[in-house]
Length: 263
Image (cartoon, rainbow, N blue to C red):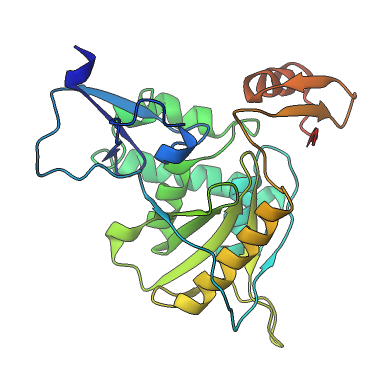
């Protein structure tokens, strides 16, 4: 009976509100690459049904500080490059490769936090899989990296103006920001005379307002990819592509990873 099923997503897995049958996955806090867990049994009355690891945030009316988006290559490792920049000051391919190894080590050392059912495969298989530079990162990888660096990683979603927070269960003192446009991650930083500032106190509300304003302006400019209704063009060969699944397959078959959205 489908009415007796519970759906969970995010890290740690949280219940997804399935009461609104016509709701889009995006509005439920589920993004491309996330694992959805199906459990039998109706949710109890004291459980809160909320989008996994997310919070809808309104764009601020006035902001006293600025935050800047640093564009990293669209090479399937943009998540790792973004985290490398905000937490290690390096967005190169070598740091992306190293962070893939870090994710594998964390997954192996924390079986209770990263069970096979969440990974969608055996842990040992996952560790080899995530080392492949053509594999995109997502919520699981962000959760593992937040744990490794003991720093919350906040993902600002351009289309939904939502912030997904990874590492909130770790009692971290600091946080860092990346922005997500539907298929690509970029790091965010605050400019200063001493250089880019990428890590902030967890309670810093002003920098969050600045990040939300940046996302709001990007949304107004349609600088995001609508995964439900998007078409792409391969920047390498010019092929027109409909949908993320086809884009992934094209990248796998050809090695082409430079995609542009048709507006």
